[in-house]
Amino acid sequence: MDENKLLLVDPKVLPEIYTNVIKAKKLLASGEAKNATEASKMSGISRSAFYKYKDYVFEYNTTGQIITLDIVLKDEAGILSYLLTTLYENGANILTIDQKTPSSGVATVSISFGGSALKSDTSRLIEKIRCVSGVVSVRQVHSR
Image (cartoon, rainbow, N blue to C red):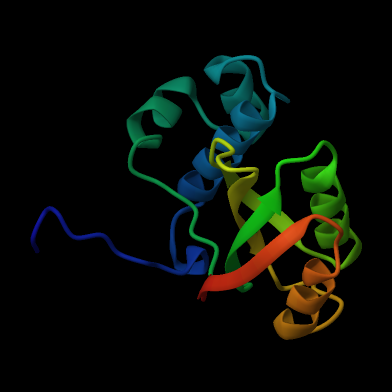
């Protein structure tokens, strides 16, 4: 097999060590474990096993929809906060926010969010966003 290829494998058929490495990596990322030694102990693996596999085992989430919107906002205090509140109230799980430097009184914001828990469909959410005071335009860029 080509050494640059990756495999997507159901964890049910893998040795438990791999899922424990993922668990240790999550403990480190969340701050629940202060270091690799602590994360390894909490996950039930040796530190050497963690270091052996940590750069080769990754979790891939196949559930949920990811939606990306480009939104143009007036350059006024609080508008982004109102927008984020609207997304939160409608069940969006925000993944990334990229706001450009304001120019000519407006700023473009690109927001990606998980849509699996949305309280309505994407088109209704976009209409609610358009109603937020200070939103100039909304365009859906991506949905998978």
